Length: 166
Image (cartoon, rainbow, N blue to C red):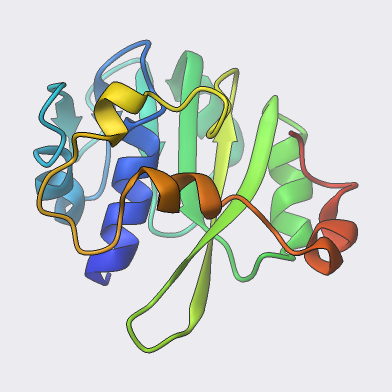
């Protein structure tokens, strides 16, 4: 996982989750949450809780189990094959209220896709500015990148508008 990917998975999730602080995440994301100076989180690298406010997976898992493990305002973030990964978005849309792809650009210029799925929280409308504006020592992430990463070109939006939820 690159530094850019770590930041975009961890910080997008943490800067939109106001409701709670129990996060189930991959080990390599632990340090990213310490960059947020206005909040503290309970980080779990193994499934030890009944409910989580944020679950991040490096690759998509069992969506029904994930959905059941999330609180009523829970967020799920994972990778997507592309910004037009219709099968992934359609499967998530069967369960989640909000399903939106977003992306980051690697140092080599390649665009990589992620997906934000939530039971209630919207990744841009519910952005917590007092968190996102005070993230320290990042390589890529900042508030404007957070917002811009969800803006898609019209030709991509047209391809996926029937399988995403905004």
